Structures are given as C-alpha cells and as structure tokens.
Length: 266
Image 1 (cartoon, rainbow, N blue to C red):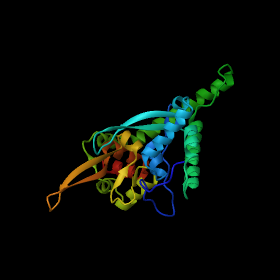
Image 2: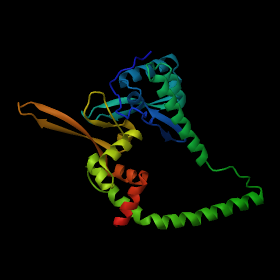
Image 3: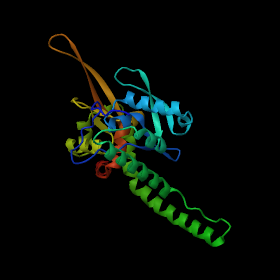
C-alpha cells in the first residue's frame, strides 16, 4: 500500500478539488504518472514503485496498461522515467492509494476518464450503410451543409486565427502575470483557471507554482531556472513556471473572451 504524503499537494480552493489531468492518444485515454502523483499528493517515485510491482506481478500489464515515457527535468537537465497509464491500469494502481481523500480523488479521476471517453465516442462518425441510396444521399447532403457552415465559421475566425498564429511564432515565454495582461484578464483569475484546469499546481510548503508534466511535455509551459546571489554571498536557485507562445495560443482559444479581444485589436 502507498502511504499518502504532502510532497505534491496542489494549492486549490478548499471548496473545490483540482481537475484530474488526462489526455487522448490514438483514440485511448491516458494519465501520466507524474500528474497522478501530484493529484494524489504522493511522491512520484512511490507511484513508479507501485507500477513496477504491478508489472512484475503481471508482465503483460506493461504492454497493455502502462507505457514508459521518459521526460527531462528542467531544473537539472536530467532524464527520468514516467508512465502513461491506461484507464484500466489506473484502476489497478489506485487500489493501493490510501488516505483521507483517496476515495474522493479516485472517483474524480475515474469520472474524468469517463468524460473524456464519452467525448471521444460522441465525436466518432456514425456508421452508414453505403449500399442504401437513401442513407448515402442523406450523408452527402449532411456533409454538404456542414461544409457550408464550416466555411462561414472559417471566414469569421480568420482574423483571430491569424493573430493567434503570430503569437504562436513569437520567441520567448510569459510569466503568468504578463500572460494575464496579454489575455485581457486579471492575474488572479488566470492563476485560478490554470490551477482548476490542470495546468499548474504548488507543492506543500513551496512559494512557487509548477507546471504539470503533460503541459510541459506538450510545450505549453516551461520552467525557468534562475540563480540569485544572496547578500551573504551564497546562491539561491529559484524556479518559475512560464507560459510559452504555444501555450498562449492555446489559452486564447480555451478562454474565449481572449480570442475576441485579440481579434478586435488587429
């Protein structure tokens, strides 16, 4: 059994649990072991040990439910291992999680898997009998109508899209406060949105936010390491999570008012 710790406690409002981070790959839903560790307030090495023990007990699990994925730690440039966890693998792994909040967190994670899988099923195209002329005609008319509507939407969104493209091609990154200004929103609102939507979290006892592994791996966030010289001559290393140009583009789409404001400024 894995004992709960406070190593990676996300600083969320007391009345609201953070949103579990899951993602889609090749039509399947996965979670990353680092995000799972942060969400359940556990050390990542303990989660890795639990997965290793499951695979040791049943080697086929390593092929079907867990996929080892390396990542580079921004603070020291070293490469470490993590796992992408299939929904069934998560269910097996979570059986060993204990603690006062473990059951509620398990339910939240399973609900998030269900939501993502339902979304994928909903977006799947319907099965049509191509040998039935009536069904085929209905399908073609439907696609024709959809193309007309899509063209209208593309024409309406083109100015905003071009603005977002310019942002995505820009160099450098933004601290969250500057990003909020660019997105025409209050910094505290952007911080809250990023925490509630699985972009950033804060370790217990730390004064700095960190980005979830899934967001840094996809290039939406990065960590900037700065060495500060203290008055006594010693050095202090600080780490700051920053939003990349790609991340700004994604936020401008997700936070809909930002798209409108950016478009109006062009």
